[in-house]
Length: 368
Image 1 (cartoon, rainbow, N blue to C red):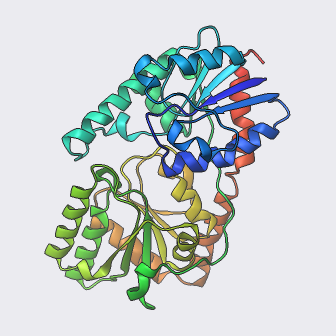
Image 2 (cartoon, rainbow, N blue to C red):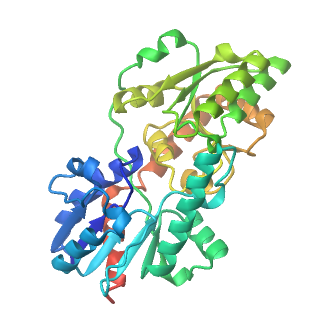
C-alpha cells in the first residue's frame, strides 16, 4: 500500500500533533503493509519529520494546487489526513482523523470573539472533511458518537483508533518554577490554558476547603497560555485572589518531558478538569506514571481512565474537594490500588497498536 500522509494545517504544529507524527511515522514506515510512505508538512515545520515534503507558501489560497499536483504525480493508493481537513485528490480515496473536539462541541466557551470565530471555521472544515472523505478515524468512542449524533456521519464510515503513550521516563527533574512548593503535598494538572480547561473547579475546591477547614493542597498548573487564553488566566487569578487561595496556586508554565515526569512522580494526585477532550494524551501520561487520579465525569474521561480515577461532577468544587480529601486520606492499600489501576490502564494504550489500527483503517477504503 502506497500512502501519502498530509498534515494539512495553515502553519505550524501543536505539541500533540508533533508528538503524534514523531511516534507514528516511523511505525508506519516500518509496517509490513506500507510499501511507500510520503509525508507532507507545512513549510515552517517540514524538518519535524525526516524526509518530509511540503508545499509552497500561499498554496492554501490556491486550493493547495501544488500539493494536489504532487500527490497526483506520486499516485498513492490512499491519502491520510490526520487533521480534520480535506483536499480533493481526485480518484485517490482520503481518510481524515478528528482529534480536536473543542471547535465542534464548545466553540465559544468563554473565548474572545477572534478565537470563537476560528473555532467555528475549524468546525466547518471538520464537518466538510468528514462528509467528503471515504473514511473517518475517531480518536475515541466519544468522538465517534458526536460525529454520528451531531453531524449524522454514517457510523459504519468511522473507525476508532486511540493514541498511544510512552513508558514513564523515571523521576525526572524538578522545575525551577516549583521552588516554593517545598515538601507540601501538591496536586498537578497540565494542558494548554484556555477557557475549556475548567480550572475554575480547582479554585472553587480550594475556596470550599478554606471555608470548611478542609484539606488544602498546593495546586500546580502546568501549560502554555493558548491563543485567546490570556484573559481566562487573568480571570482565574482574580478568582483565586478573591477567594483568598492564590497562595495555594503555582502557575508552572510550559514544562519539558523531564519536568513533567517529576510532577507526575511527586504529586499527591493528578487532576483532570477539562470540559472537552478527544483523546486526552495527558491522561495517558499521568496513568503511565502511576498517578492517583481525580477527574471530571464528562466524556471521554471515563473511557480512558476506567476505574483508575475518582470522579466528580464538572463545576462542583465541593465534590472535587471531597475527592482530593479522599485521595489524601487513602490508606496504603487503597492508594496502591489506585496507582496499580492507573499503570494497568496505561499499558493498554501502545503506539504500536495505534499504528496497526491506523493501517487497518487505511486498508478498509481499499477494500482489504
